[in-house]
Length: 323
Image (cartoon, rainbow, N blue to C red):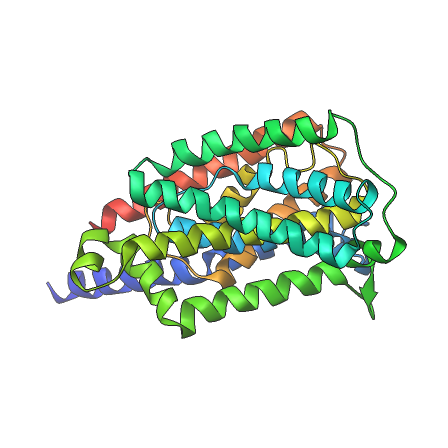
């Protein structure tokens, strides 16, 4: 009997260790594998390139994580990024607005879109997947109408610094990502809003009974999701130096995969930003390594889809065990 209890205890410890550090073990295994498989992988320039490539995903993943913590989803962030690209480009090129004013305008726009999602979800009680899917289609259509499907380019040179500049050897987008993730981690750990996110995602009815204004929490979370997607959109526009209608296409699924890989439960109430960073890095390392190994783009799609499916399946199994 005692040996059985000891085995159960050790099994629980192993499971807890896996939950806390499994994501980092996976990242380490991928780094080791691609370092051996490709001599060009473990090069400082390539690693910095990986960090810059995933920075936009990491920025958007912070707001997306907040939404998942509530047990919701935001499929509109890819289209928000597209709209931010087109509107900011149009304001700078066609309206002659300065980069600073254009950035402020599109960040307010992206936050307003997020707030609209939150308002509809909280007040009309529509499922978040339907609301944000509809918003995704609407925003994508608006972006096409503004630019008529054509790219917009010809920005001031100073604007390119955001996406292409460096502070020392570190790309500015990577710095922005760490700042945003630091803000996200602070919100979750040090503010009562962060505690509310976990409470609402864990049990919405219990959160209401404890005095939490669930409606306002949803407003805030979806507004932040839209805002951080807007920040990612500005960085992408600066990096590519061209506003295009495909700039955010499918972006939401990469972000979802990174968040779930990082342990943010699709059922809500579980997750932390540090693990999300590891999930983002795993996707970046995987994509970069497969390119270096000359793996077909279509095979990469199969692999990424499989990773998402497995991550959600593991999350669902874990959630079932805790019930």
